[in-house]
Length: 593
Image: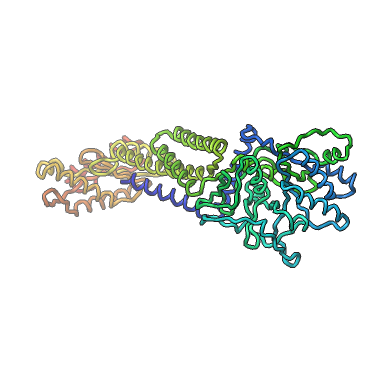
């Protein structure tokens, strides 16, 4: 029964801790933050082991530090005149690329270079495979009146998920790009990002919301064009099922509740082929340059990597990661259908409970704490290893922290239960070893141990202690008259009378047969004699129930010895008390000798 109670208490304790860890908002946020770090670690291991290689179809034309210096030296200012981009696009288009995408925002027409803006705007009329970017924000209407965007930029999304909403990617304003692009082409995607609470970019929005319309990310638009060219798959609308899975063109993306997708990373900054833009400018101008690259069938991104141009993010695999490479990674995920699917929290809790149950059973069943600990650790490490391979080969993110917390709670709870049970068992065994089964008093062996201990303490602290030896008068005749069962009943009741009439610190023992003893720590001769007289009187006054509803009276004879007057060791003390007890018997019984 005690074990069942302990198990129930252990389960209640475990369930309470689990409930607090799941429901506490601050703790849950902390757990999510740590969990994100485990995602980063797994992604870094995958990157270092070359688990996934970046697509060779993607190349980035970068405004790096060298290009930035070249532009300032040759054009006198940043940004680069837009007609130069038009010339670069013409140069690349001559080699038949699949797509050209600018991870740049061409806002505000430059009055001093109106012709340059026109030249660049004409590029979007000339080529259907050129894309550019725009960004939404939440600037005040006092600064900028929110513009109305062309309907052709938005998409229809059927959302059947009850959990998913786009509240966290909803914006109230935007900075429109130049009219020559905005009013002509639909090849405009948005480049808003989504960071975790620790500032690391792990997810990206698929759509952003503005004025109750949804607009796709730049990488999504580029990806759709790529899939149409390579796989012949086109998409007219988007649909999100009840499980928050967005499906299009044979791709399935599990969206988070905020409408973002978890990216799979291919390497640190610089993993994609990068071409400094100054080399293209030199090649176009027939200047000497070491440059020979074929853009045929490539997706060409334009973006900045120079630190001074501030388009730098922190991602799981690198602290310094250019925004244009994030777009390239996003596109790569679409091409490979390689997005990470995070196991929902309910399933994580179920997995955590299963691990907790297994570890709890192991702790309870194994007697060795070391073996139980090693096996429990091994089980969790096996789960960690399995979660890594699930992410590497299945793109599935199994959480590690909740299973760890549940496993630790189960481990601790079951060890507490095991300790309580063992403590109870130890107490039971100790009681069996030190007490008399019939009377419930301490047994003879315990009496001898306590006598030696009391002598040692009395010598050390120069203090007295006393011993009372007790014998039930005419007990053999009592057994012969009433039977042994009645004799046993009297022994139990006399023992109870002795325990009730001494202090809690006094030690009442069965000395043997009908003889009992009481050790009185720190009690002198007079007080011990008075205690013995009180006990003698109480025993004689009581009426004792026998078998068969009979009752009888008994008396006792007592002998008292006090250290150091009656003995200086255990044996001499016992001998003195025993002799005085026999004196009481010889003097008529029912008295203190």
